[in-house]
Amino acid sequence: MKILADENMPYVQQLFGHLGTIETVNGRELTAEQVNNVDILLVRSVTQVNQALLAGNNQLKFVGSATIGTDHIDLDYLASRNIPFSNAPGCNATAVGEFAFIAMLELAQRFKSPLKGKVVGIVGAGNTGTAVAKCLEAYGIEVLLCDPVLEAKGDPRSFVSLNFLIDKCDVISLHTPITKTGEHKTWYLFDEARLNRLRENTWLLNCCRGEVIDNRALLKFKQQRDDIKVVLDVWEGEPHPMPELVPYIEFCTPHIAGYSLEGKARGTYMLYQQVAKVLNIKGENKMDALLPALWSEQVTVTEIATERALLQLARFVYDLRDDDELFRKNFLNNLGFDHMRKNHKHRREFSALKVSNMGQTNVNWLSNLGFSGVGL
Image (cartoon, helix red, strand yellow):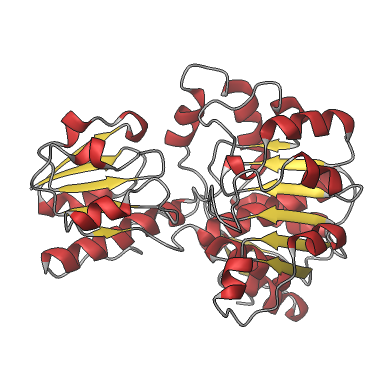
């Protein structure tokens, strides 16, 4: 059996190696010829899986995408050929939630404007948006949710309109899929008109798809409104961000908000479980056995008395400033954007760090944030 996998997926060899031979490829440059004699195809969001890619393959048993979104997959075509497909919903939700929360803490520190006391609006309340809300609510932040699609489906949570959210929130974090048509399309959801509606000193974060914000309109807007602070992990036209826009963005990263080691491993592991079902075999490998220990597994803290102290604890696990600096140095290099993504292997989640000897007042909310061993 031949397995073809995106080179950015970790632990493929450990999980799938016993099933056959494995070849890893650059997912963005994958060709139909490379797929022709493949039994299992494992991709990420940079690979368009459609008839053009698969038409020459008559033996494909499974297609998996280690992502939440499926906009890069022609699901109808796969169904027409009875090719089983699975994605990995929620695999990187915790990573994205923690990334957005850390980015907010970094903005608060840089601009001396505490996150505590702000109202945060989350546009898109699926897996990642919910994970952001979980972090914020653990810290005692008021959160407003906007998701007309989930609201129409009967989601019991309380939702507000997008205009209401823009008018009321100090921070707006975007977590929608990309949709180009329909009543609730998200392509250029934040166009020139919506950007101009933002309240003074609003923070705007995009960790979903670059085209949810009109990047040309954002450049024009930021040139006139320096009070608005922006964090972009995703960019229109990836892997080629607008060079003119980068200097106006407070924190820049190359679409790696979900790239924690735990999140990437979880995505691969979820596909492994689905392949085991399709092939009717017993999936005996365990995800926890794959993950290495954090460089320092445990930290002893007596008190988290300030927001700065919380940020310092978060930086112990992941320092966003490092990736921002690396992005600004390398994004214009040939294949620089994808090179940074491919080599982004250091990021961990809060759960990798055990926090011990905490005062009782800090135990619950730090545990709810995701830190492990709290209060031991």
